[in-house]
Amino acid sequence: MAVSRAFDDLLSTARALSAAGDWAGVRRLLVESAGTGGGEAMARTHPELATLRADAELRTGHPREAHQWLTVAHKTIQRSGDRPALRKALNQLGVAEVELGALEDAERSFARALEL
Image 1 (cartoon, rainbow, N blue to C red):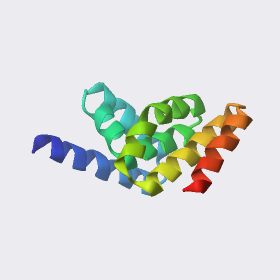
Image 2: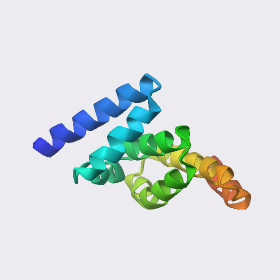
Image 3: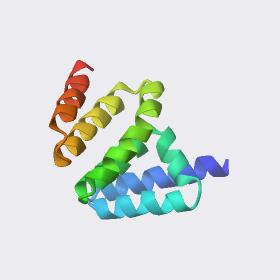
Image 4: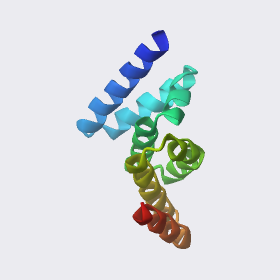
């Protein structure tokens, strides 16, 4: 019950911050919650939190961290069956790859997103 409440609070706060355009706040929330032990695990297992974390990394100038995060979270998002979240994650991965100069990888990521 406490885990569910913590998850709901984390997701609600992350959604509110992103709706307000406070991407630094989203990043801080999700990175700091990782230090408490449960936040990162929750973000890795919940497609929306995973893509919010990637959005926050990209929008605050951290494409390498976004790429690393999405590489780790991709399989979980795929297994969830949440096709819109998977499409968004693949698109974010492509954006990170463009920013890192990996244009061929970005092209593959964007193509996979379009297939969905």
